[in-house]
Length: 142
Image (tube, rainbow, N blue to C red; front, side, top):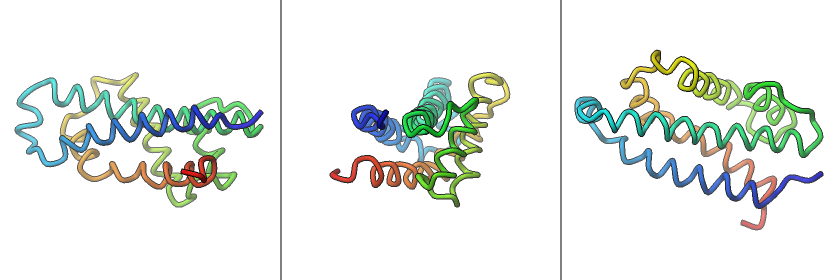
């Protein structure tokens, strides 16, 4: 089985669109961000699904490359890092993203709006090395 380039393109485009939407929150003050409950809720969900798209791509690549079926999102990230697909230096960051995603999904009442805004302000670019590495490996013509 080979990695499905259409799936890779679709997931990357999805991630680009969500990142662009998340960038709209970057310059908000914390007061403005939390003044309307829709802002933190929407931002948290967009962050969650952007991370999920990245993790889904990791799992897809690992399975299609024949490296095994990851039992967790963190294992999926480790597999693609172990095989040189994503920068090893970013492995801990991507594992932290997986943990954050799990917290949003399972411990949603333990996610602080200020933390979400901080992540949006400081960490959106963490997705870029992943996206660039996947493009270089699986979509070199783009």
